[in-house]
Picture 1 (cartoon, rainbow, N blue to C red):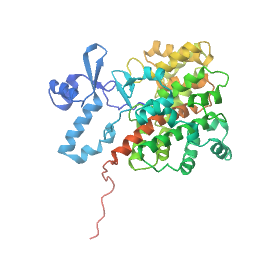
Picture 2: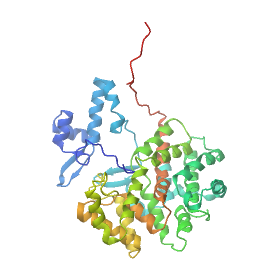
Picture 3: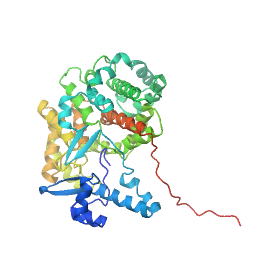
Picture 4: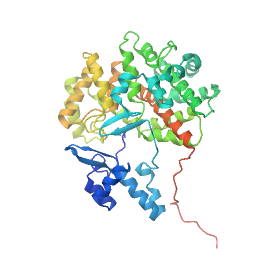
Length: 425
């Protein structure tokens, strides 16, 4: 599975139903479906036939069905709760609607132009982007140099600093050094979040100045001769910031619900992200790009993968949430194509994109855009997940703040399915 999309095997098409199909599943009239939409219980979107024809979320219909079954017969219904992405968690960070992505109600296309990564973090954590200057003031945060030395002391080289294992090693050490790590008041959580994000970004960048922005640190570390790259590092962090409640984000919410520190919340999320179900998909995109060595091989490689019946024929394409294309990928790729049209990595990426669209009519996903980004800026292997995690920290801390405020645990029910007890006679 990819970082941000888990498709259910029995989901209709890309997860949306017609009004009649939704009504049939729920055993109600079509008019009742419209009423559910007006009450916010079922999301809808325009179909490919136009605005007059709407489609209705399969997940939302299933949640309503499970809720009804829970009232009638709670035990078997409860078993299916997590399968259908319930319990339903509230979020005010990102919204996907009619093929568009919004952060805090603002289209991502506008966010990428208006805000820096720090300002987006401040907006998500404090509801005011202007708080970024105070939150990320380098004088309020420890230097990354001593943590870098600790990693180098266990034979982790510079390339490995931009990886999930390095982040996981350093977070518990940094937590022990943070006097407010266990202070779960809102302002302290936001400050710890800024400390975590600055620290891990500085580690990923290497031995660079720390009195500069997150994007500038990454630029100084990996593209010191190209100041144009600053806005691309910023954009990469922003497009990765949040995507509703995906698996790693759900893990972060569970950790926060248990009252663990922001450091533990982020480490839990990174652990979930590093598994094959999510992180493995990113690796499959990289392998696909490795197979296409030159632009003129793109069609041949794609056809070869189709002949071999690969489980994912063309990884990095076709996000069902965005029928007209993933806006995150479009933002980053269009900007890269415009700024660096003659870069070998960019030329190859564009050739692959055009070949996939010609053969399969599919659009690139964020994972493909990040892989092209990594190759163009000559970041080390494995750093695609690293840049994703840095950006997603913005969302994870935002979700943690929401969960701390809720003061509720996330507790699924469990049903014993083992051998029957052997009772003594």
